[in-house]
Length: 116
Image 1: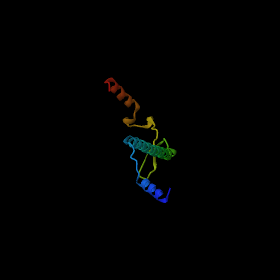
Image 2: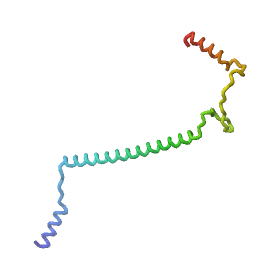
Image 3: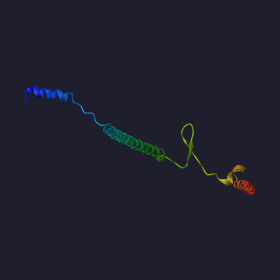
Image 4: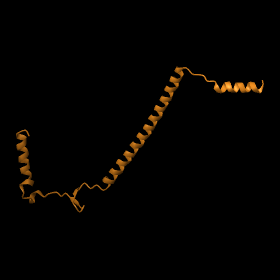
């Protein structure tokens, strides 16, 4: 074969094209779409796992900060941020009828009598 034959074959090869069937393009397109969908799902899953871990760590840190210095005797705090301690009342020394246990029991019995 001569050089002219090779040049002729090269020219034919450069301009040569084969059109694939439409089913082949559809099949290739569906495979590519499913692969993209899988990659997206993997990315969303990874982001979800990271968000859950961050939220668990945050909640744990907040609870540990607040529960470490928890005192069940402390009820509230005032403007100076000094704790107010609840104290037990000495029932015998209280003259106010609001704190009298027998009056409270009488009220409870009256409410129970009328079904309240």
